[in-house]
Amino acid sequence: MTITTPRSSSSPTRVFAGLCVVGFFARLSYALARTPVLALFAAYLGAGPEGIGLAVAISTITGIFFKMPAGVLSDVIGKTRTLFLGLAFFALVPFAYLLVNSYQNLVVVRFFHGFATAIYGPVAMAVVADLVETRRAEMLSWFSAVTIIGNLLGAPLGGFLLTCLAAQGTPQLSYFHAVYGVVAGLGLVSFGAASYILRGRRESVKTGGGRTLAAVCGKFRQGIRELLLDPKILMTSNMEGVQNLALGALEAFLPIYAVVICGFSAFQAGVLWGVQVVATIIAKPIMGAISDRYGRQPLIFWGMFACALPLALIPWFKQYSVLLALAAVFGLGEAVVTSSAAALVADFCKREHLGAAMGTFGTIFDVGHAAGPLLAGALIGLWGGVDFRWPFALIAALLVVSALAFRALVPQQKC
Image (cartoon, rainbow, N blue to C red; front, side):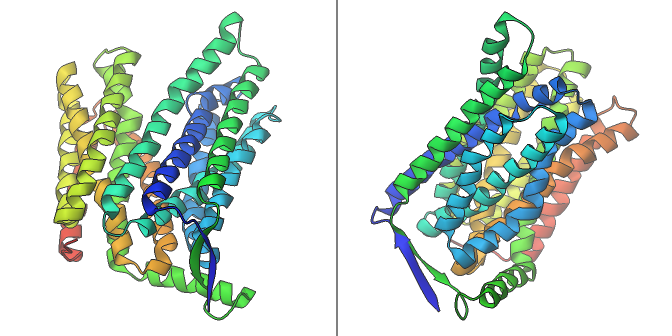
């Protein structure tokens, strides 16, 4: 049985542009809540290093467990409904921060705030992939670039607001509550924009045999089973996961290497990371268009090498200009891989399983991103805590091995 829910009469291009606006404000809100305000809030509430790490990581853990179920749910009840559910978490959960007065409360709120990206992330990608089948990689890349900009602006905005509020004295609980009030406001803007853009949107939802609980649960199980048994989807998602493992390792330890080993300032370390992010933002749409025209597998394969090479070389150099160049190359490699991986997963799956596929993709993404700092930290510890060369080389080798396995196991597909 197929149920049709309202679909906007707007053109796909207008809907896509609107989704970019929604995604920008949603990610800006979420990033503002996270860095650096969250760590400082946890420290203010008395948390030690381990507690701060848990407060930062708990929302990613939410994504690991709930992204795939959220994606499958969107295939069952409709992507638009599920998208609004995710945006509701962006809009409403931040108000709970205004009631936080202990570290334990903060961790609980962070866990529930993680449902925002866990639900919204894979479903938004599925909606974009459903809108523009012929230019899928390019549009997914543009959408991703816009959300990255939101993430990029959130951190300095949070630091600026907190600095302005605390200019007259030491941090107070009310200062943090004020910043999270802004977080809530941006979440409401995102929800309101989506309500305007997606009003009246119609989509086909297959229920398998009706709208009964048994039918819904049956489709849920079917979607998960078909995806987990598809080696092409899992292998392609694994490319994103392994690439993000390297990204997480670099995110955690490039600043440590730059400041502790090379003697650069914290600002210079931040510029190194900023160069990587900017290179990714600029290159992603271009790489997406190339992927749509010439095929995705070669870009994913060579993009892994473009990430592995600078990652392996960074700990062998201390010249700032060289490190800037290597960071930019890594950012380019990230753009090459990520511009094609999500689109290839969408190509491989059935249209009615797009949400589930993006959920699986997002789960592997989060696992890789969370595992990167842990693996790098363990390896660096084995080498005495000061030698980054062989730990980074081993992670780079993992990228190369994964790329070779991908090339052997995933058949070439021209788009």
